Image (cartoon, rainbow over all chains, first blue to last red; front, side, top):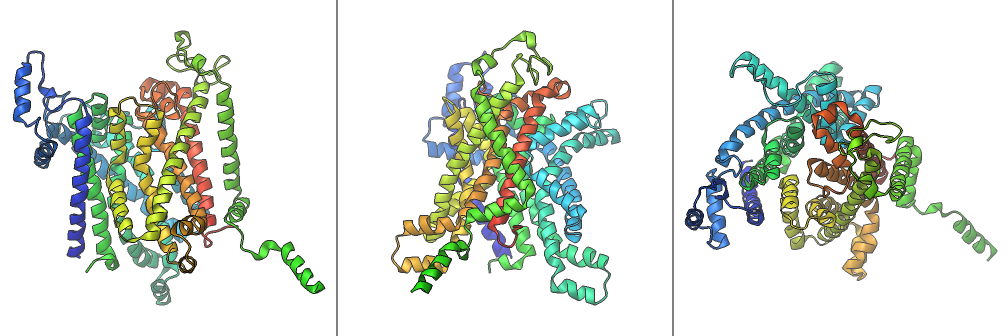
Length: 320
Length: 303
């Protein structure tokens, strides 16, 4: 068990290194350097030149890469060109917003997907099952931005059930109950959009899992012992099907990250995805490199999480 | 003697003794699934229609800004209204759809050829070639490719459509390669492959003349689903403003006008038709893809 996890983490290291090298090379192709952010009309160009010298801007690339990596590991990505603050601080607040959004999304996703998946599997080939299959097909095929816009149009503007941008109403004081509610209310529509898009995988998996389980020996045994059908579903089948679903968590996180760029831009939600698009438009390259690196790291972490959960749930894939 | 010729005649008259080809199986599936048949026909009609119609549109004329028609509502002059610059939405929709579909096809073809070649070879040979490529593919699959594509799009000098196709393809072939590899891997253990090897058939001939035809239905499924995915990726990137160059209309660009809250809430004719067309393409192509997938798997077939 531990062997698998450690081996998996070791595999991650070269992947991270190659990714960082790729990002470093990309960064070299971007105009500007970490000191461009400090330039103001009254900075002496010679001073900047001196700083560049000191920071090893003219060192060979491998040395520069090593320094950049060392700084990055310590969370130092330089200064934002546009906001003139440390990149890490800039990302910090945004990351928290994205984290909250992701948590609510994942919660809603499982809240929608688990009952639908189990019911569709239980009542296979009924009207209910067909509706669920159709729903999961549509949510699979529809692109993120189209669904997000349609939701924003319908629920935000036409029906006015939800606010259309931001994270919180300014009228509330920080920390008050109204503040927390307003925050939650603001991230609800983006989170629902996320959840609807992500349900497909979980629903289809659960459905097939339940259908397969119906004809298995342990279910027949349970039935022949006289356990009521409802209990067989809620206790035996559900528990067996649910564990592999946990393994989806990692992939869900990965999917969320990719979608966050669209969702946060459309719903005007100030998270990391929106920051990325803003930085690209503002050519804020130190923020871009930091964000790509962070997303890469989180994506790897997501697949690591999935693999670890999988190896806990399914002992067959462990390496001994 | 007579009997012999007769039996030969009977045999030639009853060709069904040979198993149905992949194409026949797919046709049977479509005959059984009316909705898939409808999707297929509708898709072909819409795509061919868009390509023909786009030939009849004078793009320069259409993209000319005329402020008098700013946000013109759908009516006699403009069937689907006009955008902020007074440009005809319907014309942009047709040209944009043609561009989006053509680019998605180009990306599908490029990633398809690369992915299939690499997938088949690595799966067939296994060993160290497979190991090296699997590491590369694993790497590509775990990186945040959407973000890196966006960064590339912004830093590439002399950015144009072929470069866009190339950038997107670089990050999309690994998915196809991985799937094809896993299929080729199990296929390469089959008896007919071993038999061919013992007979001294060259590796290239085994891969492309024996293995590839046997995997053909899976390849078609993969290409179809990729096509749908690529429509989504191109329109998505164009929506964010990192797809086609601004002068070239795309379905994504049309939808992106909705980033202006006024357009989103009041001027539905600008963004809704493009969104619905994207939705139609995605649903249709995916549905057709699923029908083909079912026909590729004997256990799931309806027909």
